[in-house]
Image (tube, rainbow, N blue to C red; front, side, top):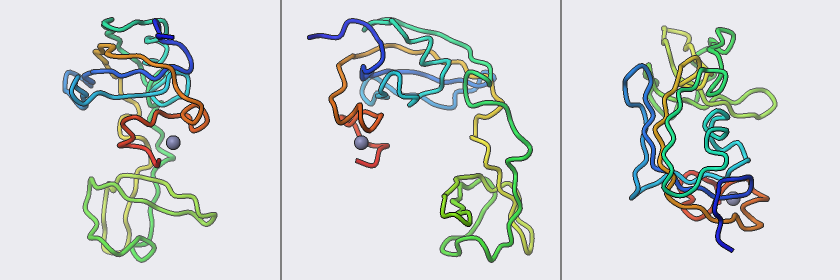
Length: 164
Ligand code: ZN
């Protein structure tokens, strides 16, 4: 049965541009679309809401405040580490993404914001936290998710960004 409209459990293929303060910071094209599973929080909540009920060929243009996107910027998400606690296999540079493991083995991804002689300051806010995002979206294709996709909470057809 063909899927007519976007609702929970539908795999959606999108082309989009994402701009922040007039500057383009992300895009997907019809040749290399973004695919996501609707209702599984694969995309920011404001965009997911705006796409509910849309069909192939629909255009959506939404401007989302931080609370509907990546959340407010949180100063408490900045931490300072001794350099010798950091993985030493690559040279640290300001602006690069690093993975930091806590005492319980959870891995957090952050951005290096400052390096001193003994310490490195890492910002664990999502890169777009605190930003107002404007998405210009075209709905390209819809299909029903299969059982495995529903179980995993993400689509498998393009699987570039997913584990399996
Ligand atoms: Zn999977």
